[in-house]
Image (cartoon, rainbow, N blue to C red):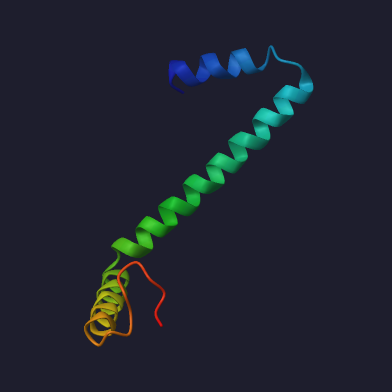
Length: 76
């Protein structure tokens, strides 16, 4: 464990129980967000993910060229 984390945990343990519970909830939420970001990064960076993104970009460009979609818009 890095010193900064150890110090933060020691400081948290000095807080009232309700504050500790709130901190624990926030840490769990942050860890879940981090896990989801890592999963998303893995999907997007995979060969299949890159193929899907390339296909979506090509489709969007075709729709823009046909006037069916405006950049920054949601279509007509």
